[in-house]
Length: 613
Image (cartoon, rainbow, N blue to C red; front, side):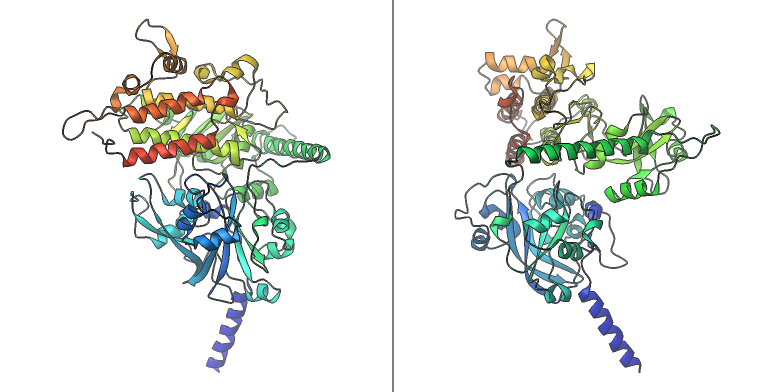
């Protein structure tokens, strides 16, 4: 009897498991501290619930610098070069493909333990890579930092140049239910801005209902999907190259479509602003005039939780306790305090703002990127809003540059981090955003000297009006960062940020402030103007550039001679000057800047002249 019961239970369990669909993991895949102790979780990889232990599957990968040919991508994914070229209808495996072009990656997906995975390996190219950046930048969310840590012997803080990592890629095989309705393959698709279940299903010619059910949604109307996470698409046949696209390509739209889209977008924006204004800054009072506890409506609380699992509405008493009553010892600057949250002992920064903090919250809640400051939560108290940010141990770039910062590669990495943050705002946010206040005070550094962009109070969407003009004025202390067209006419585009980035890059090279006192006559000088004019007047060879380099960056070889950084600095100065072009259209794009800096970084690391004291 006991044996019979056991067999029945096993059959029931197997049937349920094989019929069950994968559950969409949402933003949990971004958390490197997930646990699956209570059972397999799709925040690691997709679980083994298919009818077969191994199958053919497909992934979608978007070209990026260093991985923009069939040859380089096939090596990254450990797939057959010929097969990759065939399914994407590409005849030349060495041809450089457009940036952000989608490619279909055919893989063999196998069940290993409790998870499906396609296996590849990756040689760490720089000393600055982490499990998080490899998972989300290099492999674009097709693996997770959790699964990388589990499949490799290296501690997350001990990754070094040249180490080989085993990379499990997210894939799955069809379940019994999916096979019964004709599904032969599953495709792992990386979600981007403006994607929806209906749009994705239309592209891949599958029903919206099948797509929703394959990812654990009970209906199409109940789905909430987020950029940089993955969905499984059920397919009855191999995907076609015609189903792919190149992100960022302009598509012709009828005038009617543009008008409808503009009206719909404006209406949505109004609703968002009104909701966030109510959420953050409205003070509830009883009819008697007495203060009552400030509490968010349940539906808004759930909406915030779905955007970011770590976002929280704090009570003022929590922040008061975490900061020791906003003590002088914890004050970092005016109205800014460091604190330690009780319970998880997480270090944070609390910033007191006026009643109108909804814009900063709205922007940071939309974005999810390693190089943008993290917002943990908000608090409303006594007509003021308190924003709780992640703590950055090394303060601002401006403060750090005044200290003993002697290593070239640190400065190059910081510049690349800032560039990647701006690249995200300009190219991957929807709509695109201009930060408008990039300067060394608004760039914060972690304990590992990773840079994050902060202070989004002046940021604005490039779609706010037709000509991109802005009447908002930047703080006086950042005047050395203003592009000429902004000073002259108030015009703001993404090239406004490029100009400001050029100034930041000069600060990293010279160690000087954007506006500093000239030693010759004691007058205030704009760093960008002096360097650009010198580039015109001088032959700008290595000897001239050596005069610009921060003296603290002079390093000596163990044999005693001074290492020449002139060639490296010259490339950085030329890049900066290309960002400082007076005409916006002649300035580089952030995509070009990131590609150039990545090459400079790789050359700096492999160069024999890159030594530290």
